[in-house]
Length: 349
Image (cartoon, rainbow, N blue to C red; front, side):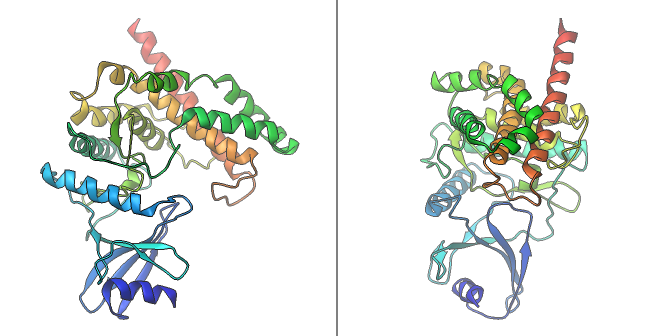
């Protein structure tokens, strides 16, 4: 068995248990227990169709860990565990890259926030992580996902998909296309601010969903995980995707969702995000947090709709309308957020 060879490279024994972990959408992940030593690890195959340079992913991870350690970071740090020959990445017979990471005992993850307190704690933990890694001299992080945050390209990709889509797909998504087109200028200010270098370049996590924090049995944060998407961009993206992830009261593939935006969650996540970052952010960044939340949701909706119009070739789907359901869900979330922000603004006047 191919996996036997990979495990042997890392722990040198065939006395082990391997349990798949299926939460992730990109990499293939297992819990590996070395029965001889009584130790557990995370064994992971990096998806090199998504991460075309896995060495960059690993090097970024090592650099970030070094920054965390040198700044007396108070949470656990996920460390790569070298193979018996000292390699961080081990290639299998098909050239697929594998790595092993330390496992934190008695930890748990959540797919959605179980309470406002847990959401606040998670946002505060990411705030602390981001504040710690954004030192005066940033490490030489390389881009593991080129063009991932190129919103101009995302809009162009959507327009091309709309132009080339099968007539039936366009008909099925007629209402969603109409709303999407009405909001097509929403990312323009973001694109301009980046082009004009008005907002600082910072290290961001770029995947700040709540499932990327490990909690203890009392729901207290233990560690920030999954540093594969670490990149240098605007921190507005991390806030925006945090809101996109935390405030949705439904699963993102629920296309029949109504009123799925949770305003109380928005408030606590914003408070948690600013907890360690308030003094670091520029006035322009702070002013644009509410805007960033709208753009992040809109861009995710745009990506789902683009994939649907392209015949669903990027995101894995369980049925033909899966990406359209995801699109509907994000549009409903965006509608709820925009109505809430309008209400807040009207009370200020």
